[in-house]
Image (cartoon, rainbow, N blue to C red; front, side):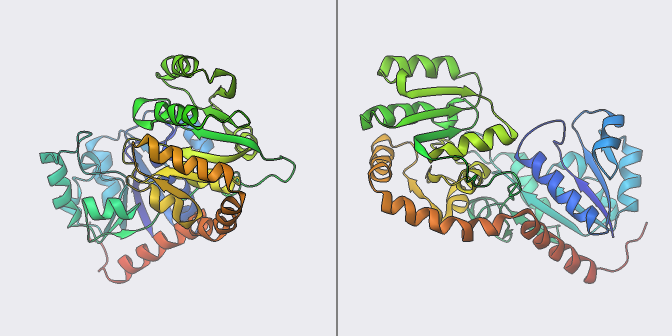
Amino acid sequence: MNILFTSNRFFPDIGGIETVSNVLARYLFNSGHSIRLVTQSLGDAGADRQAFPFPVLRRPSILSLLRTYCWADVVIQNNIELRQFWPQLFFRRPALIVLHTWLRSTSGRRRFVDRLKQMVLFSARHVVSVSDSIRQDSFRRSCVIGNPYDNTLFKRLPDVAKEKSIVFLGRLVSDKGVDLLLESFHALGEREWHLSIIGSGPERPSLERLAEKLGISSTVHFLGSLQGHDLVRELNRHQLMVVPSLWREPFGVVALEGLACGCVVLASDGGGLADAVGSAGLLFKRGVKDDLTDKLRLLLHDSAIRSQLVAKSAAHLAHFYPNVVCSLYQDLLQTMVKSSPPPRS
């Protein structure tokens, strides 16, 4: 079938939606479908031809976008974006829309544009939420399909020994809760355990000053940004990963990556992190330092609990393999085509 795939952000931008779009579009192409991907991200046409087996249309003109809708049998919109969806008013193609985040402002208010998007969702043949929290908050009629992680890259390395180390991985911005983690680590008073902070961002200088003020600089290591195999090897060194987000994360692929590298994951209980962690990790009350400290102390001192959680990770992670996730999307597409009349130009 001819699939118009829209992704507001895409390569060379880096992020969760960009990664999922790349994985899903490639899977559908390799399954025999024709793909045209539309995005608002800027890029180089020559680089696109080398990097992708399907055409990438960047900021297409109105005429080009209309022609692409005319060509399509179905539309997949990977996170709702009205600027690329308006031709549906004329073409009425069977549409599958994926919700990757809340239909609210950062302050939690439901704006006019959010309510308009909710109305548009009723026109889609299928709506997918990446976590149950997104489903409950934004569109209860949606089904839940979690995001995939790269299981060919993130895995346990038998030649890397686990150390008494805790790791954080993510952007160093205020809503990620790294300051809360530093204060909790200080409250533990542990000298044998170390804390690694992987990532970059505007909050790094203030976080380094906080570690120095708390007197834990000798056991806290800021490693900067790591990617690829270097990141995987570093994650494999650690026994615990903490995801202390103050913001309600829509999902949390970072938790899957930590689990895949053999870490026990302790995450805040806001948003979709509960889906990402499942029964293979523990949750603490979002923003509550005492609860984070208590759960950390439990995991540091009880190796039996750590072993029990690690034993559950393989079965949990299997639900988020790219081929498993993508096959669920393909099943939805097949039902859309079977139940729809042939598209009219």
